Image 1: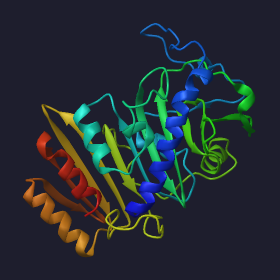
Image 2 (image 1 turned 90 degrees about the vertical axis):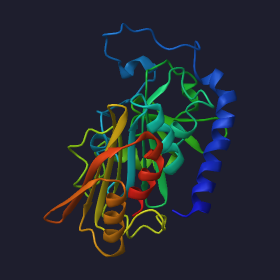
Image 3 (image 1 turned 90 degrees about the horizontal axis):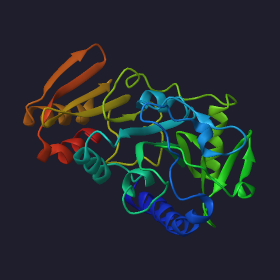
Length: 293
């Protein structure tokens, strides 16, 4: 998506959250998180919302992909508890997600957001936020859809659906995702690389990315699909980048970036894999280079 488009989407999110910050005292009853024992599993019912609640595994991008619709072009997932430096680098390079970029400026929920996923499908985007459940009020304001309560955030066009994870976005994007979660619409089958990965930051472009006009350069590249994963290890970071059917200028740039960073590169059939250690001071630059080779 071009910079103007990202800026418009982010401005809408910012405006919505600014209004929501004054609205939150009315929506969130009690002002504090639900108390649970350290070894007790969180329960979606702790949100106190009637109707259906999202209850979905959210340990990786592979889990998140099962909730996005079939025309998903691009998605990422991050565990923000893994590394502050990695979170900062992701926020500086990736398309802006409310849960990632505004994690300190605005108290979206009574408890911190631990994990975030962001996805682009067609002209719509949606986010998932993993946070400790706290009771939600103002149920009468909700839009009922497939048994879920779509809760508006103030007077904006932003909505949330409670659960684990919480779904966040515009009403059309939220409804599209709920169709998938409810089993009434197909999920994406356009990704093959990320499902077995366990990195703290996971980014993937799918087979629909090339056809999506909102993914203008520098995002994307000359390949059928890509996966980029980074995790903290031994004071630095371990990077794994995979490209399906890599070719053209992107193939040359991937080779050059790998060589300059001292990373290994190998081919196995149609998949090219780059891996190796990245120093903390090079994290954001390397992340940007492999997202858009």
